[in-house]
Image 1 (tube, one colour):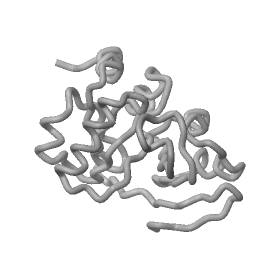
Image 2 (cartoon, rainbow, N blue to C red; image 1 turned 90 degrees about the horizontal axis):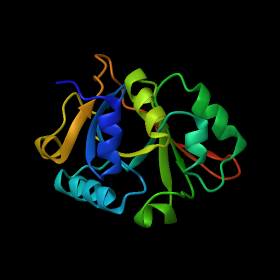
Image 3 (tube, rainbow, N blue to C red; image 1 turned 30 degrees about the vertical axis):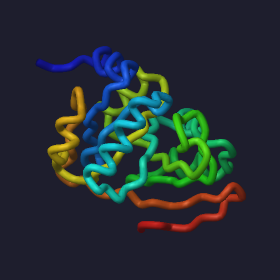
Image 4 (cartoon, one colour; image 1 turned 90 degrees about the vertical axis):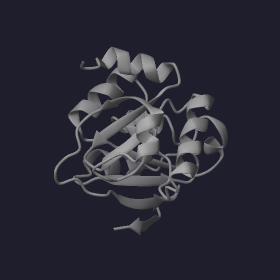
Length: 174
């Protein structure tokens, strides 16, 4: 049985986790403002020894701006016109549950159509734990209520750059 976008959004609003496949492989996502869902993601990160930083998945620059306290002007162009997957780490986050709002926040715009449709219906970003792989680990499969999307056959890990409030750029992964 295929899960509808409406059912996926309802699951997110109830604090459930989703398995999300896109151009960078699998990740597990949740509502970024739900404390319970965030706690589940952090527990999953620990259980799987995942070194990846929790990342907000956004549909467009408007959604990116929802999660960044001070967004440098160059960030709009970086996010909007990135032709390959790009995660941008900003100095100060906002509108996320728990301690994530008090420090750096990583954000990536998904280009996958199915994920874009989900993000549009949800009307905000998703906090995700990226696995950057063709398959979800067993612990992640057991933790998710539903899955959405298909991993691209030629998926690639995103470039990761840190962007200072004054527009300073530092690449963490090229």
